[in-house]
Image (cartoon, chains in turn red, purple):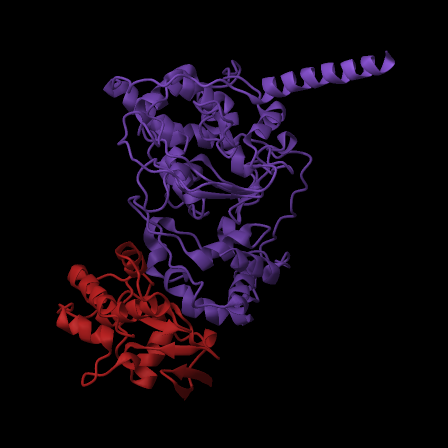
Length: 154
Length: 421
């Protein structure tokens, strides 16, 4: 049994130690926000927060997560009540196919929690590990910057 | 009478001492010049290669900064230095430098205005360059885009903030003229020696340093530690238990994956990307020369790791962590392993090494995307694995590779590397 703290709730899961967190989130816990992209830590679609830091959940074994807090995009708001970043991504129409967006929002969340007023260069460097095959990076940056400009608490 | 003699003697000694100090510590300014005429295409091409061979941009370009504009912090035991702007900007760069001023800096470590440069700038090696190579390097640097940028002030500890003291350091370590080819060695060997000991300044990192930051001449190429990474010994590589051949070393040196060994990471990655810009013969000459460096008799070599028939590693707690975090690229069946004969981690230099340092550094920081054709990118795990997990994975890999000599300093090494982050 592995005990995982996910979005503030404790889950007792009967899974092997080596199961990547992404699989447990999607298959055991039913949180489908984080996506499987490459499975190699190269695309960022699976990004979640572990102890407030963005990590690739496809390469994070559940056995390494006891006592840590995991947060996914679902913790940031819902379709009815989107959080500030989620709302900004909608307003800026940052999603095209949308596959990368959960990871993008979560990585941006980590940045704004640690640094509410990053400059453009800092945003670009921080977001670099997450890829968007549709090429909506400009809108993604615009969405992040609009949250910064509003001064909204993420 | 007697007192006057003593006073006279003291005064005379003072004058002689002051004269000596002045002679030691004062260097004249070399007059500013107008921008030189652009050199010919061939000279610029040659100069670009020398600048790549000398890794100038590795230090003189800060992350995200303009090419050669400086500003990269170099953390030394004596404080932090910031590299200077060597673009031809007339106010903040070297735009007013004549060729003689540039040559003096390269050979003696003196700036145009006469101040002493710190030996983090490897003039003890660059002085071995030929006149023609220095002239071509100068022509190339004068052709790059001038950038107005002044690096932050250095933070050197007292008394090292007093630059003129470098004159005494130079007395100890600044010697050797341009290298004369050895007639009994091949042209390739001599070319390799010229690149390794001159522009490449390999021993700056790959030799232990003494207390005042000079390379220990008796232990040249025996390996050192730089930026928290092991710069391994360059000696005896051809005869090691897990030997290198020229093809493998050329691949490694040019930013590619060396079959059976691995690829450059950490501070060596930008160096390998520089060497990749050189003509193939130069990388081959460097590899040829390095593989000829024999193990020095004064160094105790580690006993070999006998091959193990039935590894017990699978039973270790690190095995499942490896499966979850590493195996999708490094597992025996991973598709990534099929590219470029990427080796099993157990046979890489990082896992075969006596110290776990480079393995830990690579796992924590990963390997950044580079501009080379086949980037051997790896994500960092600093935020997803904590110290006990790192230690477990390292213990597991080491056990697969060398179970008779486990790493005994894992926890300490991990803590010290984390503390430097």
